[in-house]
Length: 498
Ligand code: BES
Ligand code: MN
Ligand code: ZN
Image 1 (spheres, rainbow, N blue to C red):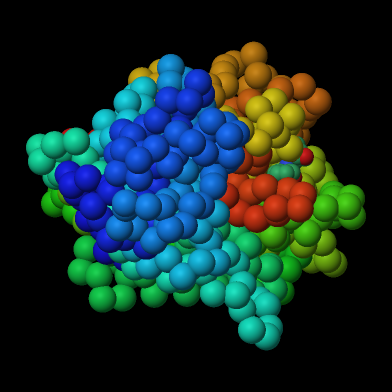
Image 2: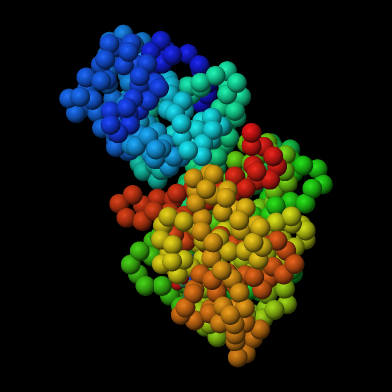
């Protein structure tokens, strides 16, 4: 895809499509006003006859508009002028791209980037525009046989800017948006792939392949024997019931010499049956998404590498399949983690924390500037926050606030949840140093507290993406979250934002 910026008038551009907007009370966006005057009131007339909606999410494609050079004009609703923010902006762009999909549109100019959008400068408008395009055109057709419907052949995507001085910002926004969209696409693909394809070995191969030909990126894979030597008894207890070999994937991106790295740890349970504490049947297929933490951190790594950011980032993915079987871990079994702490496995379905704790201990060797783990960790988190926000827990107020702000800026939002001794006490075990479950109340928090027992002395945050990593129902599919949020944290940390 080629991106461009332009200060020229929309009516004079010979694009395949120009995106313009209308607000409530029949107010035209800057681009729409230009098209309206060039066409001698074509849009005003349509508005008056009730043929154009100003509701966000609505779009009408007009063809053969008199006096303008573009083949199509996509008129999207922008809602109330005072309510136009990044979220509405993205919704409007999505409506236009969705309406165009299926047409033979190759070149699009988006003039909505001229609007006053609260909280967004030309950098964010171009970035959200490009990310939204990627999101809207995404299809997962890899596993379908037969002829596949082609997406629209878009090859040039432009953004209007008010003045030359905004060009560099908007161009950088488009470049970053493009890289983040790539990361999101990869995360969605990995999530959507079925568990008989996307195994721990498959994830390891993807991570290996990413590093080939990239001088800044290396990938190392540890096998079960190596993990055993490191003392990862907790991680290995989860893989005990399956024939699929577990992998520990370690990626290192060096963009900033000897700086301490930010370490991203992603839960990579390629299928979670629950183990001996077997899950109920309905919707169990969705547990193929239990590796979305891994997909999120690998996707973020892809985005960071594409942007060539001046920062050091390591990714650590414990990848396992959680299955019942004659060799599987049983409720009541006690395992020893790499940290030396022992764990009574009261429920084999609380497996995410069992693999993450050893990955967190392993990550100490990198002396992280900050360590963030990402996991589809608890059903309780879905109850607490639903599908809208990712739970953010941290032993550092500063880090939690940093991630929260990054989520807002990236339109990939989180919400703080507590940690604390009173919750931690719920993990007491009669027989081991701790149990792997904390009883009925506060399940998302007690899971976070469990991880907190392995992160002493590190600046650590935990993201529970159980509600946000994929959508259920008719539009079932990976969301690519939290790639935008994590990318934003890293962009801000290395000063790459304008
Ligand atoms: N992967 C699940 C969490 C999950 C469930 C995510 C549903 C998204 C939707 C996790 O491994 C799990 O099973 N957690 C248990 C923990 C419990 C046994 C303490 C849960 O949430 O039920
Ligand atoms: Mn589970
Ligand atoms: Zn799980």
